[in-house]
Length: 136
Image (tube, rainbow, N blue to C red; front, side, top):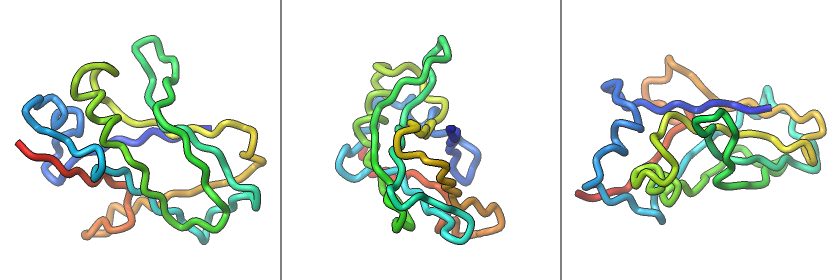
């Protein structure tokens, strides 16, 4: 099971377009992917879940860039992505299109993780987001 995550700013510009500017120095310590779990609609097994963050290369093969464990008691996740985004910015991973989060089957155990996504939320507080710190 997997989910595709696409990111655009309020003006409709994609994260990929942002990363094309090589003069932006992204902080690897302070750039994060933030995900909030909908606790009312999710059912994460007591043993938790293993998840992988990555992308599909040009041939369609999933390339894992990071892995993390999600406990059944977690309501949000902050995943460091500064180095990953710098890899896309430098071209080491190709052009950025989207992130993919994928389960592995070992601790999946029929868990169901639902992320908050509310297009009517003007503040976008709980929607998936990427927090970037950078300088030019």
